[in-house]
Length: 281
Image (cartoon, rainbow, N blue to C red; front, side, top):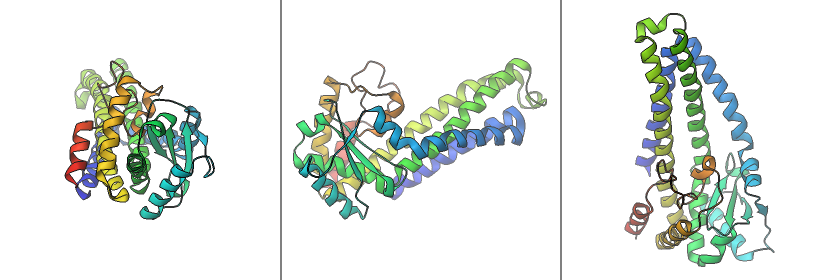
């Protein structure tokens, strides 16, 4: 777990370095600072309201204990085990089996499951899945994802500035010292690609960590491993009606049955996740 956290920290540091590098290429410290502040403002709004946005996007409906006693009991037991406040519980009216957690911190957390996942999983498997989601809450993965999104957003803005600088000859003559218009154009093309890859690496790293945390919270790594096997098979047959921008939130890639979805997948291979879980036994 410590190794996973170190890797995530290093990847965030690399993203920060890319921001600084592009800012220097385009307009020195001034240009970097302005674009970075803009990206922070854009992503701060997404961070504060992300839970409401994504729950509304999937038409998730809140459920009370009387609606689904078993689901509520599992979430409450796991929250107590993790030392977390009881999160809000939602059900998504889709038959594709999947689940996600959202909320800016443990005090504002929510877990959402689809109708499909409630239909195909046993109680122990569902407990493993919900443990994984509460693992994301406990590990504050939503905060980390927001930081990564902020940095990636800054990179996209600076890359756009670099494209314009390449067309019009740079800002303040820096292009002459840093390789000219060609260098700016290469930066504009490669930087967003690098930012995307780093974001994906962070997302995959956090999935491994949430698997470990969830297995410990449920005291049953096999429950989560068995659930992942079922979810992988089901999601291939029945892809979820999901937005690519939120794919990283789900326990398994909701787009895995679509042709180009695996090109830049936000999730590590299911086989490797299952192998790691079963090695915990």
